Length: 82
Image 1 (tube, helix red, strand yellow):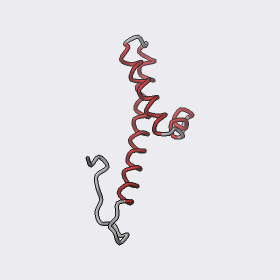
Image 2: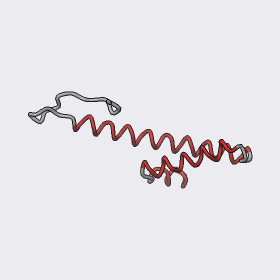
Image 3: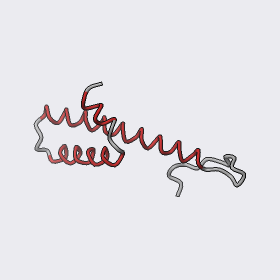
Image 4: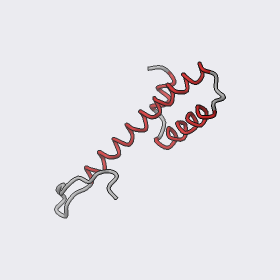
């Protein structure tokens, strides 16, 4: 694993999301040279994957928590249930 991937793996969800937003902002500016744009896109994809993995883990934990009055799982609820 390269150093950049290791750094992303250690980030909190909030820090990774903030870094991803910065990558998007820089790419959308149109002022980044092509080679740097490609590197930014790769970093953005790694950050997106990390954020998705953290969200998936949170969803799995929430589904485990949802239980009936007897302490046994009554049902699972989607993470985004409104």
